[in-house]
Length: 270
Image (cartoon, rainbow, N blue to C red; front, side, top):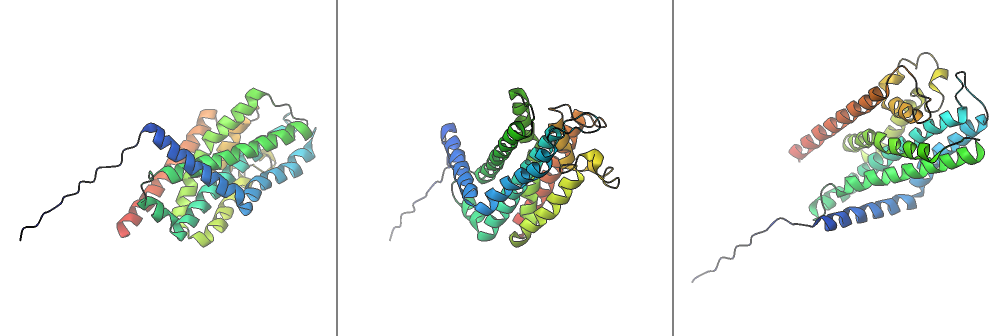
């Protein structure tokens, strides 16, 4: 009895550039809608920097620091940094860890969706939340803090913040890969809050206790805050702008390298 063998050839799925953009845009849209509807995320990530700025920034309306810097304007850059870092760490670190525990990552990896679409969507969403935070803080500073902020300064503030928070997105990725989902939020807070305080994000660096001042230049949040302070000419003069970018770039490479090593080892073990 003769049998017929049928051979199926599976060709790789090819998409046009427009189709790829559409997929990434849809994934980003639904990621943003998911997080904006998750009140525990949206209210805390947006609410904390706004609340702190009201308590410390607006409370210092009209005050200047020892070197003539306007306190409300200096703290505007600080709390913009604080808000952007929080959006990156919680949006990516906690979000990815939760999806990994629920099996969503495995499901998405087995689907025809581009492998990077989920991570890129989370990064863009975190930065979108960051832009919302900066816009609210800027409106408060101008409306109630007596701060003059030009359109150029506002654009530079957003541009530097978007670029400077990429290393913290890489940090969130590493946390999601190594920390169990149930503990991710707590671990992020244990890193995020002390780092923010010691980097001068809550209190200007010159007013920090002496024990913390030598530590600050080794923290990535310090470099981001100082980059945002350069928009107003308020940065510390001990490290150049290029030095701050180099510090953030080195930190990003460290986080990405560690994430790749952890992911590669997990793939080998599975």
